[in-house]
Length: 204
Length: 204
DNA sequence: ATCATTTTTAAACACTTGTTTAAATTAGTT
DNA sequence: AACTAATTTAAACAAGTGTTTAAAAATGAT
Image (tube, each protein chain N blue to C red):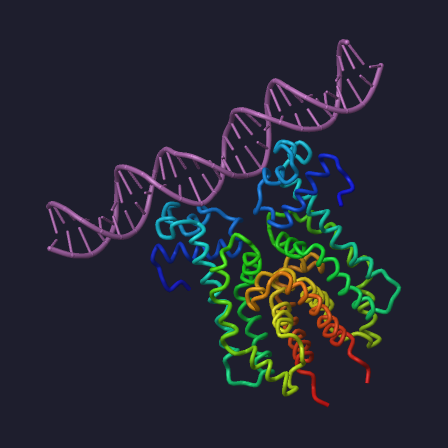
């Protein structure tokens, strides 16, 4: 699991677990120290403050989050294959880290989070050239001519919301954790079917 | 706006604003009191505790949230029209209260929130008979035969996520509040087009 | 006007918060 | 071994937390 066993790394890993599950304002420095099995003062010894530790964690989480995304976008494959793979990989990744989408969207809406923390890595998506590729595919008629911001939105909505709204969905349909996990496997197939069908309408 | 001007109602309204924007753990009793222009002690005088006040607010917010939903589901209209209307009304309602979807999903995932607060009103959706109606429409072939939990998930994903992920989307596409509001108007049309096309495939 | 009741206030309660301090321990170097 | 620097600790700091108290003010009834 954790490749680095230094005190600093152990605190960072503990902070990652606590922050992603409870959010910045949902936990205390002492809770993080306890999770790491460390003294409270060590948190500030290595990271200066709770906020700076959060920034480091947030940055790391965003990096992980973007990694598989960027991989897919840079592949030498037809756009339709890329979209299909994107959905597959997103479900695969988030199934392993189900708390991450909710963590990211809620912390991105917190106005206290500095702009420098938000901007940095987001642009890496655009830098893969995926938007230009979509634009070209729209010109050739391969892809439906919809606004690319909406295309992003549709993709992310259907990949991330099912994990963010787990609690809500379980109450509506009265299903436990195990059943919901199965539901998501099934749901992924519907999402692929719907998204591909919509974004790449079969030529007549 | 506020029909009731009693101290109790003013505190409740202030709490609603603060809780929905910052979450339970993101604000203090004093912040709520200040927002209401009241003394801190009054919060507990009328609501016993921060948690009980939260429960009252949560209940109220859920009620508002469910209201237009239930209205649409109980209409005497073809299912396809209902789904179309559902999307229209959701965008209309959430545009007026953009903080609500994020508030609900994140608080539904907080394990400290008692089950009694979660269960109560959720069942009202099922009680409208919408799921039976969908099931019937699937038998007659009017509606695509997908799992009804997934149907719910797809609908909610595409209606709520665009508001929850506002901060994230604005960073990815570098757009300001006004531009994003316009984007959502456009996006709603794409969502309707995609959802109707998928759930109610044209008969050949 | 007097009284009891309700509402509002300022102050305090015990506890937690993020952070700092200064001493203790450990590790590394010569 | 002795000395220096890095690490870890317990303790304390001031400020903030939810909550309670007891007195003050406002209200309504007789």
